[in-house]
Amino acid sequence: MNNKLFVGNLAYRVSEQELGDLFSQQGSVVSTHIATDRVTGKQRGFGFVEMSSSAEAENAIKGLNGFALQGRPISVTVSQPKPRGNDRY
Image 1 (cartoon, one colour):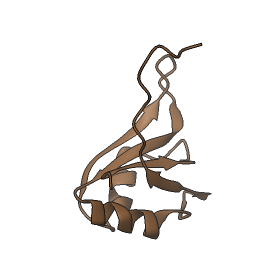
Image 2: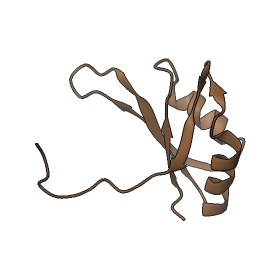
Image 3: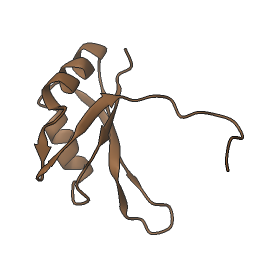
Image 4: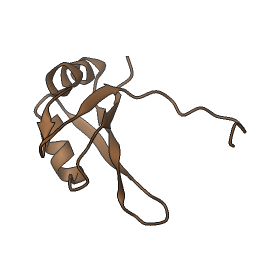
């Protein structure tokens, strides 16, 4: 299993620190990243958390998927690699 998790449905006020603090309750957090729009710099409502092991990543999914963070139930799944290629519109 991949140690990198996709976290969706984030409130736009959630900080990377807050996200890391939440996931650290499930194990060791290696890194956090909240996606932002390239032009405006505003958060896009999703991010990524990398855990130190696949067991900790699995615990985080079980423990935090559906957890209400700032009033919104977050979605926690295994991150899938971004498709490569020239399939742009």
